[in-house]
Length: 196
Image (cartoon, rainbow, N blue to C red; front, side, top):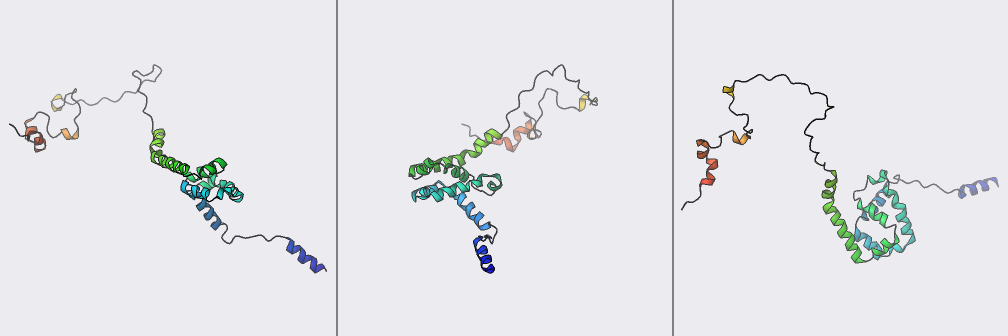
């Protein structure tokens, strides 16, 4: 009789299910389903086929909200799916997505978001121009250190006057107005006009 009670006790305890792949398959299936929610056409399909009327499916959508936690969002490639997952918690949104016009509206809005996202983002990220510097330094500023004197160069070796602007590298070849500039084949395009 003692052996009969031991077997009854063993059958009363539930067996613990051990997943053979440690939940990897379930993780991938749930990830794939959540990412499918980024497609308004798929949400429209679910609404048309009355999945949103099933209480078990609504519970599954509530369960999937754990994907919004940071440790799971790093696996998501289509972040719009998290927005739609949050919207699907609302019964009004689920009912509205059964209508083709609302599906098209959601699809268009998603397209415009993708189209303008970079421009709108850069508008807020790019640095603003710096304010104009003040003309006079404040009186409380410490005096600047003087630089060592520059050795003087005789005036005969200097070819550019102090008031002349610095030349760009393209202007070093021929000074403007010289005889060489007129004979330069690069400038001859302007002189090739037919004369009457």
